[in-house]
Image (cartoon, rainbow, N blue to C red; front, top):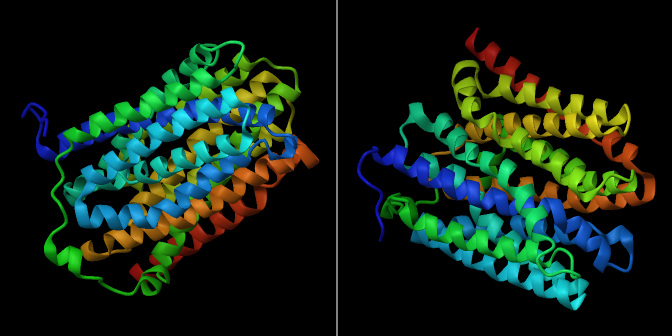
Length: 399
């Protein structure tokens, strides 16, 4: 297997490789976010189903989390990530073919295969802490997520550059680009050096999963991921549709998505330090506040600056919640329980994301852009209350 030069210690080398993998995978996801709903709108007879392919993608992510985690518990991270990348290549090629054929059902299947690939890439952030010491864990997660900054620059640019490759068939080139990006991630992942789980970890089941999931720390971490990612998906998925309805160009939509992705990943270079200094709960509460600000800006009007500012706030809120909740989750399990706990968390998260992705297109089609944004207020308020509940519970335990 290829090796990196031995200039970095193992945990830093793994973080570097995984950050590059995250950059490639996130770029692929950003291209999907920019073009998939628009392609779905062209292919679907019922325009209310425009975001169904994205919803099926997220459903595939959800259904992949447990088998992916269990497979990597048995075989190791590298074989699992490689299998995920190969599936993503197949999905991107199928999407491109479906666009040429004008086949909405086939397009949905291609989205689902890319979703399977994304179900594996979710574990990049957890793989970073497999060989990291406790002091480096939150920073490792944050730095790997920071690899997604490249997606903010490259994703929308690749979407704009590639969607006309096969004119007059719009978007087919973008899905071919997704296949190429997935293949590149498969090559990069060959450089990670994470020991396989020990025999004891593979054999031991640890505590029953329901007992782990009943812990207040798990409930809060999972809810942070579910609502943070669900709200992000709900608003982001409808944004290109809302902008086209407001007579903005595809280039304008790509520009807004680009800044959104930068908002998602650029804070990662310091979020881990903030978590280490102020604690995961305070960072998560800040993320919830940013999501409320996003909804307020979107509800205030439909100017280009409002779409831009709201999507930047949306990305930053997602970042604080996702990294904060991922860090908090590590407090809920023992080493032998790692695989099933991580899988359970991501299963719940992407169950909500699946519903949000489908509801996004339906809400926008039936009730409009204002309803999409009003729909985030109650769940974000519930999340903020839960975070405060755990914070005060811990303060009382110390007193």
